[in-house]
Image (cartoon, rainbow, N blue to C red; front, side):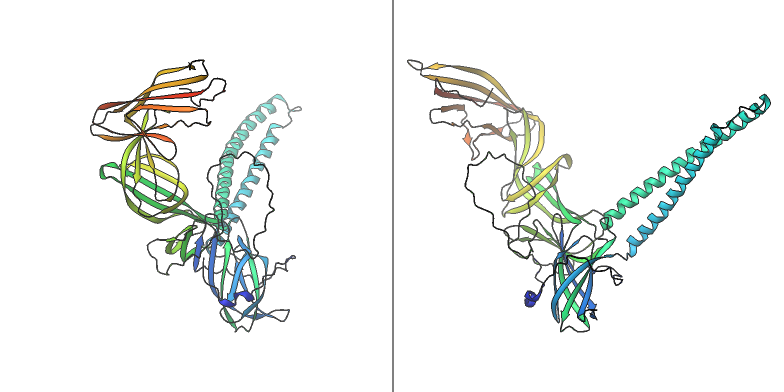
Length: 517
């Protein structure tokens, strides 16, 4: 984490007010620009150094005031003075005095809303005029007058209908401009028009205090984006890692030292509550997809130097972090920042699972010398520059298996030769089930290929159930109870695997054989 606080930080006492203080007129300006930002997937830890004047308050105590963005968590504030001691801290909501791009956007939005209101009024006026002509009374008019009125009505209604059509198009266009600008403003500011004003009481402080503080900020975060390009002819995988970064603090982070972290640091004041300990029967547990859990960090995130440098990964045991150096992150826009780019040497083969389908999937198994921590993110997969698809990806450790889609020139088909059941033994005390298959593995390419054939290895779930296998060639069994045949097929060739399974169990046992074919 950010090691920015002096040893006397233990003098800080944060007081959470239950009643908001009166709104102050002091809150002119903007929150101070961060020197450094540690960006988590859904929040950020901001590090700020700011010089502020010390003033005498109505309570007779000397204090300083700072502003935090609307989406800041004031309870997470950790503040110290280079000279002097922090004795108390309080905060309140104040109106934001906006500047720069946000101020210009709000003025533009105000003008658009005026124009939209005027268009709405013009449209209602046209509707009223049309209704007046449509409801005109002609009961007392003579025939000649009726003819004149009819011609005039036709002319007026035609003109009013055209004017209404044009005005309706204008109104819809203005409404869409208002909607788009509101969305842009919401993306920049998080939809807030207020700041947090923090008052810190100082003791033994000079006329101008130099403050260092950190706080958590919502409305920002980052997500990983990966790119894997298979290059089988070169026996390597080109790997690229980018970070999609967003923030809506209402201000641009200019030249801030940016660090990406996979998990959020816990900076709470109180220790966690101890749960009760109840020993009881366990309910059935459903398997769930891996999520982006938030855990307390066990180590500190080192800060990057001020000058912009190449991204550097920090290995911290319980999580991973990357220093990106000095970066500018604009408010309200999604930007992509490069994090890593590497070339991995890899062995390529095809993975086939004939009991599921006949397709062969190009597979790379990179040789990773060091463990990798790549959090969940979206990855694009390419083969020799051609996009083959997108899917989620994550990695922890040194072993990775990358699939790059099916190759129609390589196939594997499963043929069921025999499936029978019956009784076995002198007095028929056993029941049996026998499967016999042939798997035809075909390479239609003009070069040899390595193929990994996989099929589930049957496991006995009862001491009285016996499972026997016969295969030619014989397979190996991996740690996940999968039978594996490793084949090298010549160009335009076919190899057949003969495989049979026999299950024997007591005659009176209700057996779930676990497989239909």
